[in-house]
Image 1 (cartoon, rainbow, N blue to C red):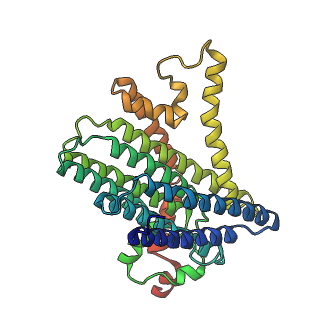
Image 2 (cartoon, helix red, strand yellow):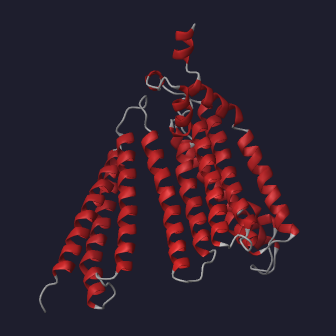
Image 3 (cartoon, rainbow, N blue to C red):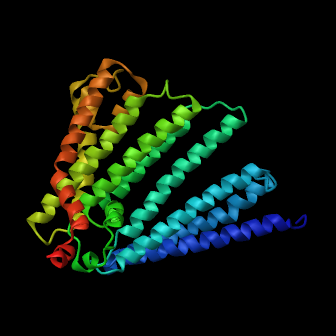
Amino acid sequence: LQGMDLLQGTFLLGIVLLASIILSMVCLTSGAMTKQKVWQIFTTLAMLVGLLYVAGVFAFMFPRMFDFGGADLRDSTFWYITATIVVWAFSYFFLLQQISTAMLTFDADNRSTGVRIVCSFQFLLLWAGICVITWQMSLVGGTVNHDPFFTAILLSLIHWAIVGLFAVTEWDELSPRLTSRLPRWMALRFLLIPWLPGGARGLIYVIGHAVLMVLVTKFCLDRFGIAKDFPWLFLSGACAYLLIFLGFSSFMGRMLMNLSHELRPAHSRVLAVITLSLFMIAPHLIYLATHDRYGTPGYSMLFITVPYDTLVFLSNDETSRATRVTIILWVLASIAVALNALPMARGIREILRPERYDHTAS
């Protein structure tokens, strides 16, 4: 056995303990999200398969990692990477905790604020990590380029597309229980608007973080002297796609739930995902049917509804054609936001001037 390294043993036991805590929360969240017995059976089987896979990873990957010298516990870089992974893992632990709490809470209570706060923390954590990594590379004389910021923007898009879909399709009205618990200081109520439940307030919440992402990107690129060569049309188009998807999803969800009280936010989310999939698949089918050979070089305006193809085009092209594509995207984004302007105004007023305060003033 060649003896036992105390540091390695302590590290492995600590990682196993943390993994056990996080996996327990995953199982608790899965149990809270499933109500029907049929889905509970499928979820249980999926959890068992997942736990067996994780057990296999711990049984084979970690010993091999130490045996072949892939991890040096006396290297500061290893601990920096490990600390980053642990912090990210615990952020998802708290996110799952808030989700499970929300699923077990009655509808009239606040089921959104905790989830939104954790998601904001994850967003800030991502950008803080990217900024620290880039700063350290500049200190040691390494090459500082756009790649970390491309990664951060793409991960932020995925993050806010998923989180935002749940946030913008909630019921807009606050329950009397939540209205009565609003703070009496108007400035505090104003600051709490994006984090309070409601689909229109959820759209404000996402727009605020998109603006923050642009500002942080601009500041960092200027700070490291790489802003000149950065494809700003790519960032502009990415933000436009986010607003288009979430703006139309919020509008369609609101219209759908107004048709019948039997329809729930989950139905509007499914409809939004199906609609997005159709807009992404249809251009490729049309292109296949109208061209002799698929994959002809060049970007076609037909693919403007496909975020991946369009963002790749915007990241590699700075011509007037790319500018026209960006303008079209922002016209659509403006329409998507405008469709939710009145609900957002009502959502702000509902917090700043709730009925209980008006009644007291009168």
